[in-house]
Every structure is written in structure tokens, then in C-alpha cells.
Length: 317
Image (cartoon, rainbow, N blue to C red; front, side, top):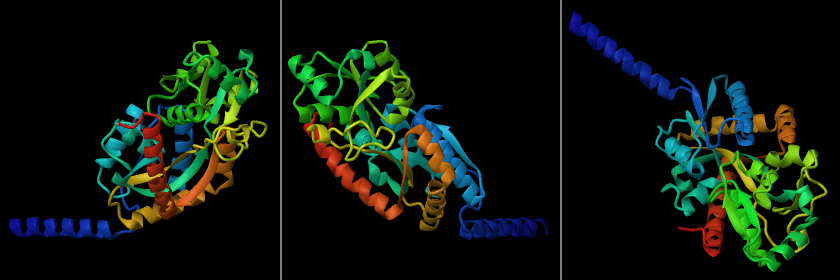
């Protein structure tokens, strides 16, 4: 009788496992969202807002785990190595391409399945208000008059802000010294007078702009940023550069379509909610939902563009 009992239990266990696999997503456990940035950063804050929304929409738990390092490579590698079942997400960005093309990781965007784009951000060139440069023309004139003398801080070697900065000055025909910093150090370095300017995202700058400590000289995207309506784009000022930053959700390659669709729907409802829009405005980011198919097309198209750009400015390995 004992062997029969053992066999029956084993068969029942297998049957339950099969039922769980066929159950609608999510049917078990906790969804984990990997964030490529330290806790407390604007990227981390928006990721946690999104995680709360997904959890509410799917009636499950979503935990955020910060895995910063190597331009995003640490977090990307972790998620790519997880089981493709919909329970491991990455808060991805343009860094999936820049980290690959700069040689910081062996994975490219094809190691992941896109789920949805969530928001957009506008890289900007900013200086201390007391420095005296009033606009992009002023700064570029000084940079051309003193080649490789002015210093411009960014958020790390091969980061989106580094590439945006390098592209800006290459197109403008000016030479500066690019200074990569850990994310938490770049703004204190500007305020302390250790560097002349920064290329950063508005969320990092917003409090300093409001307090009058920092002046934004140019927005490096197609259109003016709603958070900085009086600041002209680089294109408006004669420098043809546009490099918007985006953030979204991706999962390991091969994740079931049903799981991707469920996550996409939950993200859409969250991003289109008044609560998320209000929080995004406070953080200086802009909700910009794209569904999985269109998001994937955007990433592939941009990856080719970034590879070409990084080759031109000497950042492609």
C-alpha cells in the first residue's frame, strides 16, 4: 500500500504542477522588478510607482530589487539568466544598447522580450547659474575658444548622458573633457565648481533649477521639455542633436505571450492613470506608454542608430 500511496502523491503533485502552468498569469509567487540604479534615484522612485500599479492591477506582489553597476550590465545579466516565466522584470532603458555597444556586457536587446515603454526623459546641458553662460551659443563659443579645457560631467562611461554629451559637442565642433561620475556625485561636483557643466536628466536638476543654483542651456530632444518650457532645444539653437531617454519593462527572452500581454495591460492602466501622471510630473518625467510590439520596434531601430553614433564618437567597442 505504501508504494501505491507514494505513486498517488507523485501523480497528484504532477497534476497540480501542470494545472499551475496552465493557469492564467500570475498564478504564483512574487514578481521581481530589477532596477539598474541605486535606491532613492528618480529612476528607482518611478520604478516603485510602476511596481505598485502593476501589483494593484494584477492583484499580486511586485518587489523592487536594486542591482546597479557597470552601466546596467549587472542588472541586465541577472534578469537574462532568470527563468522566462514573467516573474522576473527589468526596468530597462537605452542602456540596453549603450552598455552592449560600449563593451560593458555581452548581451544586447535581443536577450529580452519587450513588454512596454513607460516614460520618456530629456537629457539637458546645464551649468551653475553663477558661471555666466546664458545659452548654448555662449558655452560653445567658449569651448571652441578653449579646446579641451571645459569639463562636462555625465552619469558614467557609456551612459546615455555621456553619449548625448559626446554627440552634442561633436556635432557642434567643440572639444571638451567628458568626466564620468557615479550618479550621486555628478551634481555635487557641478555645484562645488569641480566641473563646468553637466549633461543630465531633468529629474536630477529640477530642485536646483527651482532654487536658482543651476541654469539649463539646452534640451537635447526634438521638442522643448514641458518641465522646462523656456529652455530651447539644441536644434533651435543650431546644433542638430536629439537623444531622448526612455524607460520601460522587459523580460527574459522566451517569456510566454500570455504573461507579456498581462503585464503590458497592467502597465498601460498604471501609466495612463491620473495618479501616475501626477507623480511623473513631480519627478520631471513624462508618461509615454508604448505596447510590446511597437516598443520592440523602437528598441531595434534605436539600437542600430546608437551603434552608428557610438562608432562616430569613438565609444563603440
